[in-house]
Amino acid sequence: MKKAFVALSRFSFASLGLYGIGLFTVLAWQQVVFHSLPSLPATAPVPQLTPSAEGNRSNRSGDEPWLVFPDRIGRGETLAELLHRNGFSALQVHEISEALTPHMNLRHLRPGDEVEIRYSHGGDLESIRVNRGLLETYEARPEGDGWAAGQLSVVIERQEVARHGVLEGSLFASMESLGETAALVIAFAEVFAWDFDFYTQSRQGDRFSLLVEKLYRDGAFVGYGDLLAATYVSGDTSLAAFLFVDPSGQKGFYDPEGKSMKKAFLRTPLKFERISSRFSYSRLHPVTGTRRPHLGVDYAAPVGTPVHTVAAGTVTGISNSRGNGNMVSIRHAMGYESKYLHLSRFAKGLRVGHRVDQKQVIGYVGATGLVTGPHLDFRLARYGKPVNPLTQIFPPGPPVTDDYMEAFRERVGELAARLEPTGEERLASRLPSSRLSE
Image (cartoon, rainbow, N blue to C red; front, side):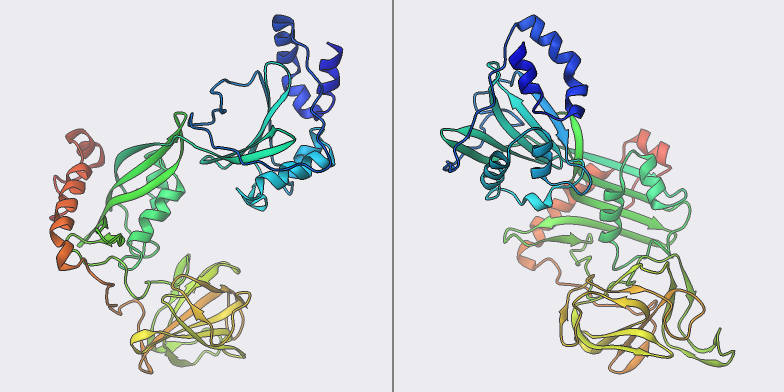
């Protein structure tokens, strides 16, 4: 018993408090005495650890450890600091970190990630396990004169789930009422981002359906896999998208005819609260009180809201003026140019001449220039002539090729059948018998 107290003194009082009662019960029952933690030499080789073949969070022998001390990475804390407060020496911490580094980036650990300190039945330190999120598990264990480390295999179960709903409140609220999370809402909205603006075009009573893979580990939900199919019906607008991977490995979302859902331009360059001013050749300026053209769309949003490019292109201007405030200009393909006005600041590292990708953040909403409040004035021109971003029709991306069209139609038929709601689901969601024909 005295040796057990010596070993326990090397761990944080937090861990001791959580597990003290259970430990004394086990000690009394098993009548086991801990050995001291192994002392490691100043220079230790790092042999390779073969990842477990036992699957989900199992050790190499398949036997469960006798005792596990779990802890979590705190805010602003590193793995080294966690190990230090659990009684490991500076040398041990260094060698554990060195063993793990080839297999994982320790700087990517986040607050809440779990670290397990595991002991064998003999009381010897068996391993240190680091669970990065819910899908990755790494292990370091004493082996020979040093430490070995590697990534353990994780068994993930995939379940295909269909969801059907009616818009009540927001898309987020409607999805949440079906038991889903924000991650799925974002993935769903991004599929239709080139054709439909959920911030301005969605209406109460709109209908949606989706087919998605949900991931489970040890029976617990850990995230989403692929969104396989999605439909959205709003008034006379009916949208459908299907995920298709052609034999060459090309992966993307397409409508039922095989046209790409991805367009050259996004509908909007930010997440906004409302449109405060539309494209007009004669608008009463809110500051000067005079009528003048407003050849853009004003999106009201809080200061600091990220602003991203609507299409890939090259930065042609980064400027500041009394009227436009901080402004970024980008040249795109097919003669288009976009401008982003009244920014509070520019994205770090943005330079004239730099190439930018679609949806890359180039600045943040502000109230610089001649304005009455924070918003983004977004402008679009083609071959030098201003065009209305809200009514412009953008060309789609590459469609499914003729060589793969037969496979695509077969895949769409399979997904559409699995997406079709049951009679009970249709009644609960007030859905028609077929959404694809609407």
